[in-house]
Length: 356
Image (cartoon, rainbow, N blue to C red; front, side, top):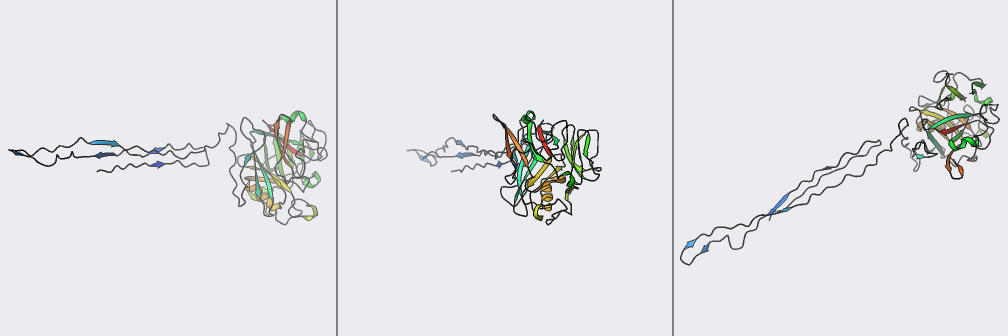
């Protein structure tokens, strides 16, 4: 008896980190036909007649054909990357860390055009603390500087101590500004005037009249172009060309801001810009000056600057919008101030992000 053998070849498409379409299923299954041949009983021997001996013809039954079923294995499912709206940035990729549960991004804030425009993750630090990181697509959110009620203070076109209720339906997030102006070694510009003189060479958070925002060195990367709407300066660049400033050490208590009780790892915050134009914010407890710079680089910043430090000043709050109105959330629990900070009046300057 013949033995039928059927082979099935399974090809799976490998899924990458981009939106590559899955390779079509390739089926190498081959139909093999088994032929069973059966001899009729008693027909293969000679039949002897009574008077004449004649060799009887051999009779063979018609062959029986049985088709072996073809087996096809479907390729493993491939998850396509989310579709990115025209003009929008692709979501950030994971940040490799040695601490489980960190470095993975999750969408936060209100969606824009049905797609997230803000993501958050956490990162471990050398001191053992966990800090928050926010990523913002400038094509989804526009930025505005708010001078606060006391520092730098003053009278402005839009009152600067908090986000007014009329503007809150479009609010995506708020985060703290820099040091008090007397300690910042920099200036402040808004509404066409300098509240404090801008310093050449200072690290500068610059907002343009279309709401786009960047970070750079004043006089080199950014300057007083006609489309500049606001400038907040604070010390020098902490990160430049993707490298942390060598003067930012793990033991600093003064060069990068005077810390309470000369602590080397107080709460700190910083902001930077990635090569693709995305804005990144880092903030939380237990950050040395070097640790803040390292976290900004890990988040992809090519240029970055320190913002305010110490327990009561570090804050990044993001918002969702429910039936009851604004719903505030902290970037990380280690930020001690209320999640409504800067929605309620505040003495210090800050940055607000609004949906486009």
